[in-house]
Image (tube, rainbow, N blue to C red):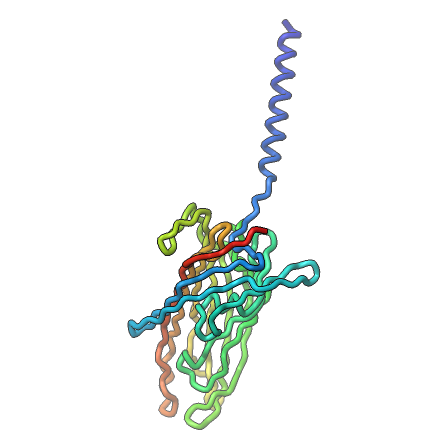
Length: 279
């Protein structure tokens, strides 16, 4: 009888060890995200819409493609091109084609720059605000919703802008952060349903001050002026993007300085079709 119990005890122990080993193997199995397939020849066509605060709209269709790749220090970087000139591109596709992308550890990483047209903000004769973007994490499939992916990408610069015949120093301060968004089982874009989707956010905070005869005057209080949300589907790429730009300027209250009107515009980019080349 003792031998009989010992026999079943050995079977039970062996089974538990086997199950424990299997569970450990499953826990360590790596899940690879492919929410922006980077293969030369891949392409995405988007329906772009720009909505202005006066109720008017601009619409266009744009195709971006992975045009080339290059390797540096063991890392492969991919360059994207668009069939539209820069001024006619969508907001986010304009960023993507103005730099390079790479994928590592389930992250999409961007190197390039974000250019902001200050003249459109109502500041005439101002040079564009160019924000260098170095190793910006666009998304991280292993992160949790709300996790900060890129932070402390801040800087400032000063340029003189002619106002009523006088050059006035304007100081521009900015900060860019990226966040992991929601994880969705499915998402519908342009009446197409996509599975395994998540979003990611980009927020640009801007502050502008002017120096009038040694006195600092707030022109634009620190505010989240640019807010971008992109949606990515597994084995597809970016399927939808929405960008809200809002500048709420301060009243300067100087007789020789014209008021700068508030500015607001919204951009959206919706997937129309895509081509993913097999590796």
